[in-house]
Image 1 (tube, one colour):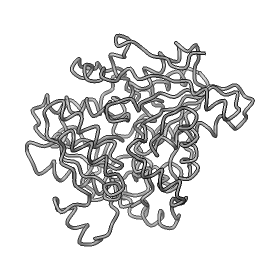
Image 2 (cartoon, rainbow, N blue to C red):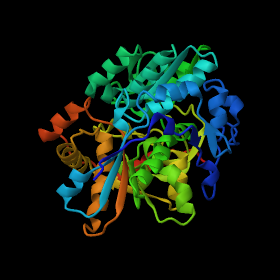
Image 3 (cartoon, helix red, strand yellow):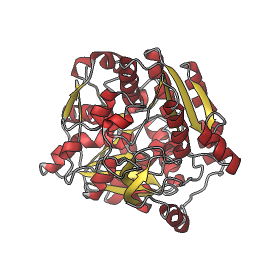
Image 4 (spheres, rainbow, N blue to C red):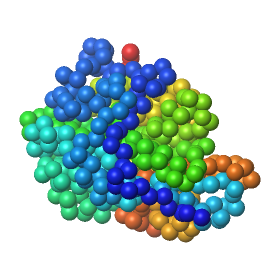
Length: 447
């Protein structure tokens, strides 16, 4: 049995796939918070290059990947598709389980797929410096790598709880030349105000986004960069699923279930959306997005207009949200601690194409340990949610011969402190209280 399915460099997709034109019912455009009218690209051009804004709002199904981006992606792409045969054996299931290994990138996750593209387009626009936020540090590491490739400065506002929990992510960012500060920080008006009100706050992605946007908006040489949620990010990540389609053909197989973990939605959508046209043409595929019970935007939030950040500096996005001032607990899957979900993923849930699944922290770590002991790769805490989802699907009916494909969004070799806490019994499950979610939801903008 072949375990690994690898494409040659010249078989790498040369175009990204844009799912937006194919979403039944379409996507609602972002709104201007002041006027509540659809926001055009002009107002956003203060912090984004026009090339990315054109991709954000593009009606085209396919967009060419520039050679400069291809050259860097080829350092690790095409990434392998792997049959998790040892996991199947340990589970005693007749299901076939495949994973797309995005942990082979220079920083160990899927994030550079869009970081390289965003750094390229900013460099092309004459920008000298990029400000961004990061949760677990995966995105900050990826953008640090990418900006280094194009000679740009990088300032990273890292959610404070992860800044303390994950020191080696900071080391990665420093190695690639980035400046990293804990968020909220004294470097911005937003950060200073929040530190005054809540000096002991663990921080949140919403707060870190506010700081990065303020930084970009107050400097002419600086743009802002976001690692998930937005349409152009999912466009760049579609290379994962486009490769996977070719590799599943090499394996002589096709997926019945496609699974990914969901924080902002980019790694899940990157694998899933290239298969959506097949679904719309009548092929029976289930798409399952797994999320933490401690930050359940899909299963506990509402589909509504909301800000992408705490200080209400972003446009209003129509997405599943827990409310822009929601501050989740410091679970170790730091990349899944975002209050909102990508409008694309939210729309696919609305259309009953994507099924959300809520998971607890301990069952996900248990799944990650089983995966490490069977397949030999230690997964990031975020990725453990996808693995747990795959195990649940495989064991629903162990005698059913279905094919499961999940996105292995990143390895966990810089997350070993989280595993230490798990083995020491220091982690616990956490359901975010419904009353606190309701309190946060009450502050949603009235549209």
